[in-house]
Image (cartoon, rainbow, N blue to C red; front, side, top):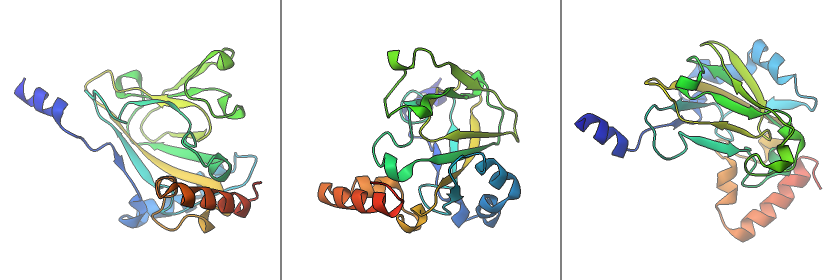
Length: 207
């Protein structure tokens, strides 16, 4: 009981970012023909961005979580801003453990990537089904970052680990420096954000 109480009060690691900086094997995954084939499913060309925008990243779903982003609510990856810059983005998830209700599997609101940014399923999505992605270790999942998705906490005694490789529209690697993510733009200053967002949007063909 003491150990459980300590665990519930501790901050636990749930994400590892830019893993390619420490592992040449992981860094090489973005050039793996199998992952490139999956990235080719996007109608608009997307490219790997190396150690930018948090990729490659590992998400660690921790059992017994009570708060924080180990319990991912419904969201889109561009939900805090920069949609015309970040999207389309295609995320390949390499499942290191089985994804089940017990391990905190990923849920998708199928077809929601066609809609504007909204937070959480509502009446606008009443005809769209929620799909739970159940996988085995070694499987890959593919989703657009603009698709509404969520990953509730594990229900069992074991969580899961997933390695994510991000692919984004061509030109985005000229906007973000190595080791830089959208948060580094969003949380600088209001004036810098407005200027950077406008310039970045034009750089990738936005208006």
